[in-house]
Image (cartoon, rainbow, N blue to C red; front, side, top):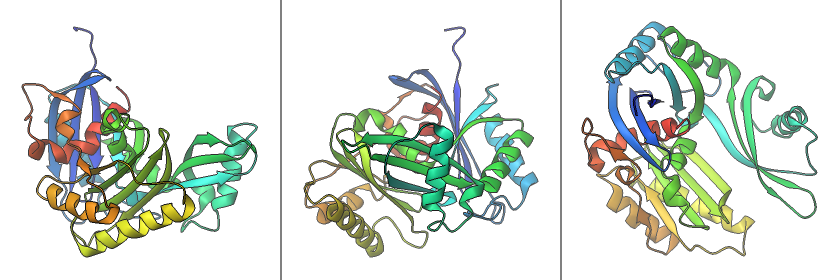
Length: 308
């Protein structure tokens, strides 16, 4: 135990820097400490193409403050950013890749007409989800404009931290609740975190449909959210008409979780289960153990789990 290493996860949003320090093992992470510092209006503005950090010095100062509150010397950080910073999508590709370089070239070529930024100048990652009998592949693709991601990296370095990984919140939330999702081979995850609605359909243990949408002007139980959930499920069912809704789980802030689940139940015609971050970790004596206090740290916890 004397040589155990804590892992730092940090979520960046337009309004705050939020940190979670994890220890223990991947099977049962221990939440050692949490911290958060507000970002004043105008310091950060989420954008796909333009620089997000408007006031780099103020941003770096808030990052340093949030890190200092953890009382830990860990300087490597796994970062999670708002989904609106990048794009997440499913992509079908004919044939197979010879190597990663060819894969990136083919993916960029297929996406260049559909992205609102220069696909040639992006940080792009992909995962092969399925290999079909005819040789075609189903891919999960995430991409962020390279100038945007580099600005974040430079800002963390100026704050004295080393970014070892940068993810989007949807991936961080899936990781935070991974042990719950793995209980079901087929499940639909519907989340409203921050101002973002996420619909992730997992079939036979792998994602087969993902739709993420920023709804900044809506609350979790707004009619617009309900319509977006219905629209997403309709697109999924049109693409996979043989599928049926079996298990549905939800992520939402505690103050709206019950009403959000009721709204989801109306959309999917089955009773969903609310997932709570408090059941994903073992809290130390230095942190609260209740869902209300821990929920705002969900994405930061998921980011830390990436390196645990």
